[in-house]
Length: 492
Image 1 (spheres, helix red, strand yellow):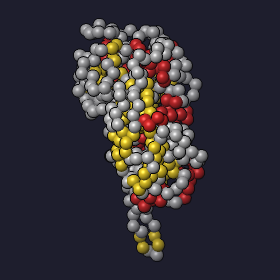
Image 2 (cartoon, one colour; image 1 turned 135 degrees about the horizontal axis):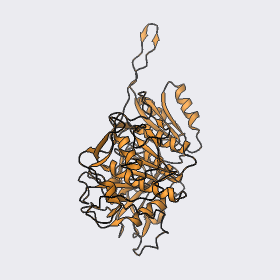
Image 3 (cartoon, one colour; image 1 turned 135 degrees about the vertical axis):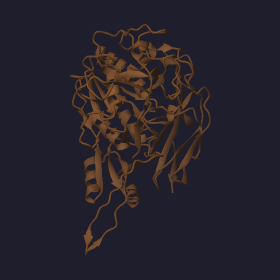
Image 4 (cartoon, one colour; image 1 turned 30 degrees about the vertical axis):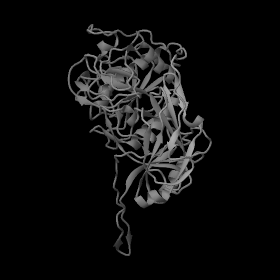
């Protein structure tokens, strides 16, 4: 259950306009102009009860969330948003946003060949363990999967769809099928015996809503049982703390989540879900080991993998192939390797999987990795068990530092304001916790910000007190600002 969340709004909105018509003495009421919002509830609230109250007011509730977050997706007018914001059971209200598949089109096949060797040139072979990922379920949160494709036939399990076009979990775009076959295809896959569970949250154009992605993650938490599992999310767009929290909930349940870094050639710490602290965030390389020109970069990346001109299953027939480029193609290479690890060690935790990937990776071969990026290239070692925890780092933890603005205890703040802090010695990045409970602890989630000394919050609720903390990070550990004391501010 969600306890506290960061209520920051994303810039681009996915809106749905709905007109309700009623007749009163032959007069027609004006249509309601609505947009879709993701609402989260405070600890102790019952999502079904809150959603029922919303329906009783005539509001259209699209989804109710119980596990990834405690909340709902609902269509509201501007006045209804203001009324709902005053509800003491409401923690956050965030506009729905459009998320996109992270892909471009181009080139030729080479990815599998690269991940089983340390250096170029390519050998023309791909070696993998005989278990080949057997017994592992990989949840592909994407455009769906062509279940009858010969690359995957017999290993696509029943899934879940949030797209209301009658197509179920079948893929009408091609992105999800390409991703799934890169993970587990008999020819093009890393883990050739793993099973695929399609969760369709993107439509035939490769677009979907924030609310659908949260509902997909909620479904994973509701129905994942038994077999070891991995989640792949080759999508993104803007920043959403609601998505960040939902992804972290899945990770906290013991399921590794692999995400695409994004294709905008910017710091991945600015996008969701790439910035989630516990996720395995993947950048893309080209066949010459250079960072792909489109690939995002920065301290939020964990590893690089082949992403340019990757051949995998196509969607036009059961034997079709397609060549695609993007961090969407890099992420499933990593998800496949994690599936190999989970097959060998079903109890492998997300943190252990991330450590194993980092320890086994080929260091220093990615050219132009980008500012702050770890220079690690995915290596699919035949030893797929996780190494022991690393020894204590030799580098010192970041130095003491302080928050500077807004000052502690300030009131009358706008619902959009900028947090500022000074630099911490040796820090390579900073993380934010924004909370609504005064217990000097992070009941929400820590969110990566990158190596910056300010961050702008938008869409805060009025007349609400918030508590915030910044921590500096590097290989040596973390250091909280102001000797671990949260600061507070109150909006007007």
